Image (cartoon, rainbow, N blue to C red; front, side):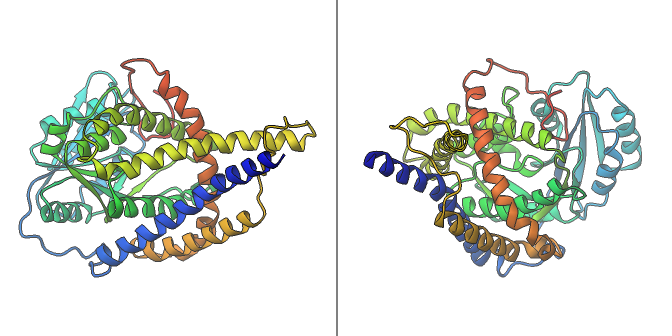
Amino acid sequence: MNRANALQTVLGAFAFGYPFVMAWYWMTGGLLFRWFRERNEPMPDHPPALPEYPLVSILIPCHNEEKQAEETFAVLGQVDYPNFEILAINDGSRDRTAEILDDLAARIPQMRVVHLTRNQGKAKALNAGALLARGELLVCIDGDALLDQNAVTWFVRRMQSDGRLGAITGNPRIRNRSTLLGRLQVGEFSAIVGLIKRSQTVFGWLFTVSGVIVCFRKRAVHEAGWWSAESLTDDVELTWRLQLAGWRIEFEPKALCWILMPETLRGLWRQRVRWSEGGTHTMFISIPKMLSAPFKHWRGWPAFANYLISIVWAYLMCLGSALWFVKMAGIPVLPFIPAFRLLPEWWGILLTLTYLVQSVVSVTVDHRYESRMGRALFWVVWYPLLFWTLQAGTAVAGLPRAMFRARNPKGTWVSPDRGVRA
């Protein structure tokens, strides 16, 4: 029994210690980023003048976007940058998307439309658009996203400051907040995503860019091998290939974009399982490349180690939860298996306080990018609990799907990405 108690103590400390450590890791990285990168920066709506304004190509893959196209491209026509083009790639839409895009192109001088005869997936649509793009810098957004009028200027400014930047991920903000799930995701993108990307920029390299708002250097994408049509999460896979090829990727919080997210638990679950499956598959194909030159790719090891630990943690939490429910049902647990406590005593209080501190830090860091962030504090406080629960479940579901997925699958997905297969 002593061994069982010791094992229970160790497993409990790991299960609840991992999110505790990561929360402080993210907060530390976020505050360092805020102090060294953002403290003396202009406000997002007041970008400084640039020494030059190179041509920027804005790529928007569209599949059945008739409800969103008018709004998305009307906003793009108001981008405050003197030298840009808009490439809309109609990825085999079956609704009125093609007709609407052609009509928009007749009204927006900077806009061109590329029509693909059948739906081939976001990756192939982006490859087609990139090959036809005249600009060296490629800003990519989703067909339902609303790009901030100053985002392109902020991307170009950062790219001009460092020639080894292969990509810059922007700052997506949630548009749909009429439901409880939508309000909770406001907390995710401020309390979790924003801090993660800041800390990864400071401490190592990014696990993934935000595919809904990102700027690529065309030469870097070419050297990395373009977007892969075989990947379910092309943004994760290309992120790792770019960094393995020697290019750096950073976060630019002033490059804002307003996005739609799933508003049902089913849609959110399917979206996140796909993200987990695609991320795990990316790790499978990236680890041999990292092992071939471990010192060259040293910046990537923290991200990989965190991924590996998160998988172990997810399976442990699911196993522990199952044992807890078995115990609550009065079923005797085998003597060599510790009786896992799903709701710890002092750890629970400590985690709650940590999430409260994390929420305050995230709102403090993020308030300049969205007014009235203080009103979202209530939802921000609660999201970490949903985040870690969702993280555990989707990691457990995504690992076997990635291990046994078919070779050369067709990654055709409906945009906007709400976890629904086309």
